[in-house]
Length: 348
Picture 1: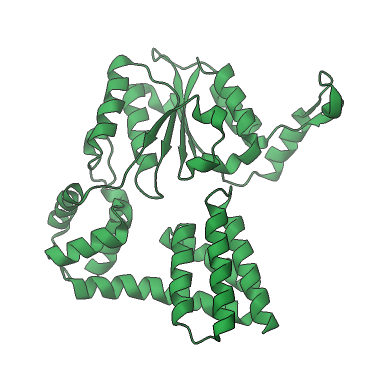
Picture 2: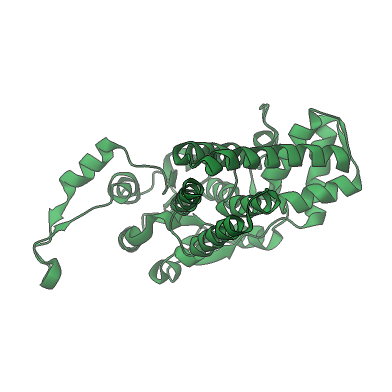
């Protein structure tokens, strides 16, 4: 399981389905697909950080065997498209001469992600004796209206390539996609499996943790092993004998410090600084939008602000949290939230 890496979450990342912690029913179903050498398009959904991508990659590699390098591809639907890719897609756009009504004669826009990244891979047959290639698409919900175009590719090239879609927002996936996939909900790891896995890490890294601290780690990480191992590594730099007090020191210092630093430019009305800082926090600490909303709410409640401003801030956070349930892009919702908060700060 382990590889030579100073980052523990990378070092202890599973390489096979058998090494994945817990999730026995999911592993059983995927191993059945491997034994039958066939499976439908899959849609993996669950909370951010529960291991959806790791499971998809382990399954794909075992299914494809030795030929996985040339027959497996992972794409991120939310990665910005380069200018060159947009230009290529624009060149390939065509006038809809076959259309009638309001769309007659209008230019048919081809999304660069579908045309430049997806189509060239799925339209070519698999190399070797395997039945088909596998394409993994992360953050699929961010495609928005272009999911219809992706659905057409799934239908046209389904015999060449099976698709594994990954999302934490199944409500943002259109029904035609859902109806064409086998949905697998990936749950957080249960405490027994979590503690067994952490004990393996502790033994290999020669550190100790008591039972109350281990339960605190489980609750704070919400059963997400990557997050738990990152916190464990940070805590081990302070002490090799970890208790609840040491663990809380690491958890609170990282979380509270960053969010408090975020409030300062918000209160100054400096939108650009807040946005830059917020993106950095999400990138470094792998925070979901919901975690940001919750922590902002906690800090604002504690902050010495007037009652009217505090209520308005809380309303903004509640609205952003509600919209993010069906929203296509967390970054847009967060940007909208901090823009409103900055404008309110400038006003008062």
